[in-house]
Image (cartoon, rainbow, N blue to C red; front, side):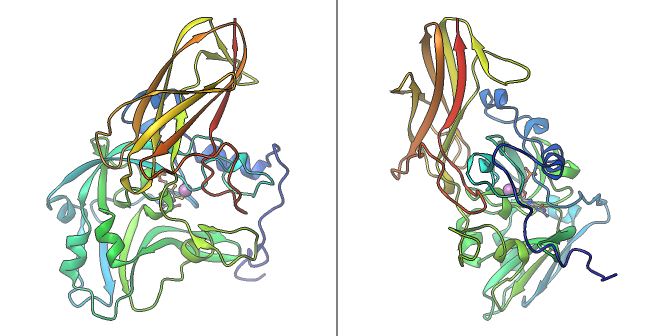
Length: 364
Ligand SMILES: Nc1nc2c(c(=O)[nH]1)N[C@H]1C(S)=C(S)[C@@H](COP(=O)(O)O)O[C@H]1N2
Ligand SMILES: [Mo]
């Protein structure tokens, strides 16, 4: 047998809209999503923050783990977690969203983690700024990119690799990248990248490498699988693609009322109903307005001020619900004029679907 049993698996399995394979259910069980009711909170409780791990969760020892700076640095070094924790600490609430969030709503759909709406959350991340450490390691003049490698290893499309991503030096400075060891005031949990990860505020989650082991200064563009073979917008399979980076404008609501166990449709008693939700956009851009659609009419919601640059904003709307059947929708607009579409934007792998959420409710 070949040393690489997956070398023939270069194509993703075929899919049927609305029908999920056992492998996809397995992915969905490992990669839990936010409980939409916790959108009522500014900070997502750690246990409700979504998860996306491509391979197995590495169980690393925080007392022996170290971060290596390698490659074309003039003054490379190594740091323990204790060394990193001794540096000036920053705590930042950041809304993180998986680039695959909404994938299940794109038709025809592509095989991968089948998110409906749940691949998002806001945590208070504690760590230290990455840019000064890169400066300390002193990148040589020939450096074009910095790569970040995780300890998790596996196969995708026939290619064995450690999960890794890259950023340019300019991006690291501009994006306020953090080297993070704590989440919501507690040490990172294994599934969220313990003992060390980066957080790239304002970008989709794939950039925020977990289980960080190595930071390398590269003299050629990074060609890691998770940078060049995926996380590219593609109109079709053979499209050259454009890299996915900033989060697209989006909003979600807490589904009102109570659910039916098997259909997940909602029952709402007639009368005043307080709709609550969150809205966010990429690169720390503020939201300008959120609208709610009820019975075909779009109405302006009340929007809270932005408190933290990279965290979502709260919105509310009081609905005088009359008996009937409704599809509620919400859509946000950011200050740059980007608006959520009503229909899913097309992407071959279902990335970055920011179409307005639909919630079916019965009022009686
Ligand atoms: N090492 C490593 N880092 C990773 C991943 C991974 O599989 N391995 N998944 C990425 C993706 S796609 C997302 S959306 C976020 C999810 O972070 P979370 O699981 O803490 O929510 O981590 C990113 N960092
Ligand atoms: Mo993701």
